[in-house]
Length: 186
Image (tube, rainbow, N blue to C red; front, side, top):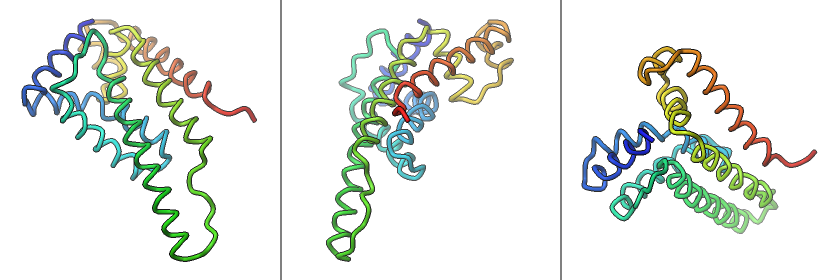
């Protein structure tokens, strides 16, 4: 709950124009948003671009956001999915133009089934993270997105080193489960 209240405070400050509040939100969520973008696009460069586009859109839309007791990540994940879909459409248009210009047969760059699976994956990851306890989300944020080691995260949260290690392991297991549920059967 403390992290949710912290997010709401930062969102309110960022919506009022605070660059430092927005930078704090960016640092807290840039890695998970990048993972979602990469999961959809499969290209590191495009994922970086979509991550940046996601935060530009978020900055513009923050004044209208009403964050009611949840993490900011599901909202950012939704923006990211839309930006990634736009990027995929742009790839398709570019590929079609290239095909027309060169009059050669080029294999399709985008497999529709893979797009659906990637979008499903992003939704599952965002849902899993959004459905976790405040402590688990905070441990994930500190360790996975901000690079804290177990001991530093434990000190920051006032819990034991083992609590951080065990909870982070469970969080990673849940996220792996969300990922493997979307993999097609062989």
